[in-house]
Image (cartoon, rainbow, N blue to C red; front, side, top):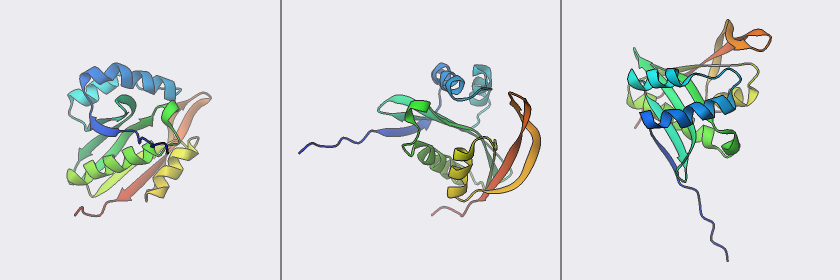
Length: 157
């Protein structure tokens, strides 16, 4: 009988020495990526910034902003080689926990209409579309709208 070894999945606070790796994952994942400077600014200003690792290898990251009883998912990404394994759901769940722990009653995010897999993930955990931001994202043919989604958080235990 062969023993199945489960990967070790960890979520920890992002550090400045993660920025090159996180920025490289961003470039691999998006046609219009954030710069390393944007990630650096998020860490320096104290936004909740998190890294997900699998067996010690950085496989994703998530960044929140917090304020006035609300959280906003600014960026969430799983590296292409790690997609389809439930890691996005795992990381999103952790971001929602962190939002609750910081007193948020509601969480917002924007998603591109051209990213139906991400939209489906958000809907599967209870996010609903509450509006659109016209021409929000840069796109190959100009600009793309953003679907604005929200989730009402129930208080934690």
